[in-house]
Length: 337
Image (cartoon, rainbow, N blue to C red; front, side, top):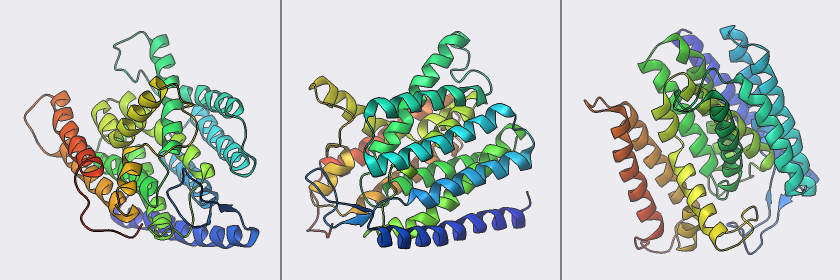
């Protein structure tokens, strides 16, 4: 695409996201579909939940448009996209009627098993047999779409994380203009645009929340995008770009699991939740995560004459600094939450 075409592509999905989210907000208010505060919530007032009714259709349309433009998508890719639609539908039902965890996990595994055939080649770079690679990918993908749901707990955080991942993949396609990264880069730009439009309504104080109807299919599509990126050889960006969400969610899950708690139930123990409980505003926490993600993107792409895996060291240092700020350093003054 030319620069003008990229600008039109990005602008259409940004404006479309902003306007469709506004329309969904009006619908949710009219139907009184609200997220009511409870002792596990990070918000204090009833807030419309279901912004994914705008984000998910735009995400599906955008990915489908890139598939059509590239001409590289086969039946497997389209089935993966259909699975994303199915997860969005299931998650909307879950938002409205609280489906059992067994039903959710069964459908998620089914969607991921369908989607795994859309990944070209081994994700683990041939380090394990292909059958084992596929089993590990299924488990990792199911975990990733769930952690994206678990981490969507304060204003702006998932818009920031998803947008950062999209930005990083788009930059990769610009700096390494190889045919295998072009379509993924356009999808990354589309994700960035859609989430920027959504953030206009979801930034603190949020007018509406994403809901499972948004976070689950978003995690599913981003999971495919990152796994496909790794399968095409860019394993290091695929690991570093989502690393804050991966670290926070995985550490918290293990900690709660060792205590014998029901890990699928809502709680307030993530690093970002501890920060808001200590007095940080949602806006500050999300902004700190955005800054850390930008630093991670710099680590990925800044020229360094070192082995690729050594970039994981400065990435780990950035995450350590972020968590220190969120959990341990004194909060200056009292911020409105």
